Image (cartoon, rainbow, N blue to C red; front, side):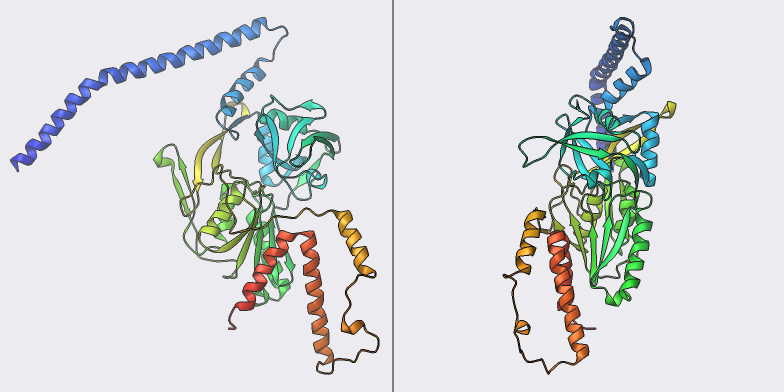
Length: 448
């Protein structure tokens, strides 16, 4: 017992001595750091005063300070920035599901504005803007050297007004101009439809309406199909979905998971880490799910995809996602502005971060680029002499006597469905591939 006490006491004394030896240099180092910071702040004040009093033209002091704050934030990463009062108000309107603009989610890369994804049905989408496009000029003015917020301000304007954006696109030798008419963007965050026996859930963004829109659409589509027994599976289409609210990503993931972790976030301090788990209940009733993603699927989309993929709840089809694995916190500031600050990274249930890496699909399926003129020519050609003929086309062919009229009608209906599926492959090859997977899975399921 005495030895134990002595060992403990010796350890304590050694600790005191060690602390005494290094405390002096540490305190001096911290003091030096503080002194350096204050010197730099004094330098900032000197520069501000020199600009205010000696710049060739009078300056707006408020804007000058805002620019300095924004410069400090944007130097951290592409997603941190200062939101002036107007931009902060616009952001709150946007997350509520209705806003004015072009309908594109953008980020900044190498000084230019990169399109993360166009939003379905918006002016930018209808004008042919694609995920991965670079916007180099707005109404002839270069965006090089502008902050992301400044470039976005250039693209804003009255509803109904025209804007010309210059686009650089991979595979095109020269940049080209695109005319877009600004409009009020009203988002239905999630829609559902039936494709044969498959329910397709198209989720375009993660705003305050996403989960409610999806749940309502899913239940209606299942009812239209004649009940869950008539459904062979679900396609969750997250292509070109730029993300949005973390809370909504968690809710959508939870909708298809009975248990287990959905996502975890880890900040600079361990105590700021959070873990979010699923609750019992599956809107899809255990039916197979295919998730569709592409290079425009980012942030919240990747949280949902990663959760369903890691739990083996869904097959992920398409191309690699965008790779935004960070969480931004909006911090309101005095003067009705706010700052968007990257405060954490998120991790999928298996513990992987997809920051700058993206999520790789289980099955890689590219979306073929179809030339509409070529398709039209092919259809015309097939409808003429080169159209394939069958026995039924031959003059005088005998009839099939082994089928009743009802059986023939059902057969024709099945053939019509097959033809519609073939047409879908021309319109949306990735979607057709996803639906084919669900058809294959339902074909090998044992009968109950």
